[in-house]
Image (cartoon, rainbow, N blue to C red; front, top):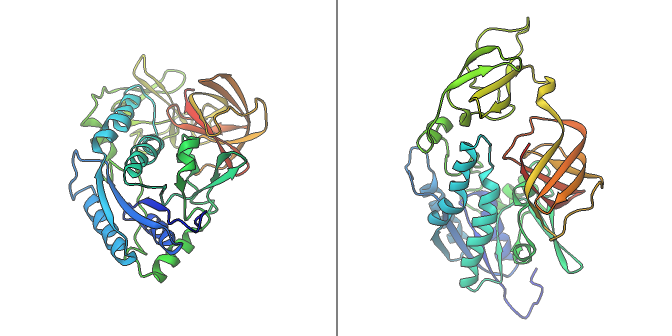
Length: 364
């Protein structure tokens, strides 16, 4: 609710055309805010009907705004996205790492470029349809997990800072997905049953290798076992990630077992893909990791050797751990149990119960 009933606070809501952001806008309107919808266009290179749904998403957002009776505008952040997110995405893949562009998109576009634009429109707050929550604690703001554990998106928001959280509302963070859809249906929102979008926004449904190949040169090489036995050829190291099982093209069996093969490492110097057999192969597990490019939501690093929990990928169960902050830009995370397929380039996100503390980019 509005903290001051004598003023009608303006909220600019990022509306993607999906049910979550639509219900976020609807709830804010019901709560008495002055709501303005904003549809962000972040990709233009090949915005075709074959793979990109942005036109339909825009039409859905406009239809919802009409039902809710709020104005909606379109803003093009394609240049900012290419400079701040996509260039980093390509550089990371070229270096053999596996980045998470959604993390950077939130920090650089949805809560920076979007927030700046909203301020120009006279916004007191911005809002999105993320499954996360903000809580004021003393003089600072905390980022909390969404109430729906199966939809919690705090992992993607760990790079937000105090200034961003102070001006952000997450209207559906306390709800479960089924409740969001029920609200949308009851409110007669036209997209109440729309399927959730998945995957990386600028790739859509197109084949991943085909997309990367348009932007980066690829160099085929050998697929080897840890002891150096050559068992196949890879198409280019950038196409593979740690823990990958599908698409390796390795036939037959080795070592008397028919267990599937998994990527365990990439040797960038020799252009060799290292694979092992079996999901539980020891080479796929790590007791600790190193991370850099650290960001802490409170502005301060957490206590060293405290018992926290961490995620090294989205939808992973919280893993008990201890943190050693070695420098302002570098930390080590030691796990109570070895972790499967820790992947350089991905984010490690640290939690204390429901509170997201921050995290960094995994280096090894």
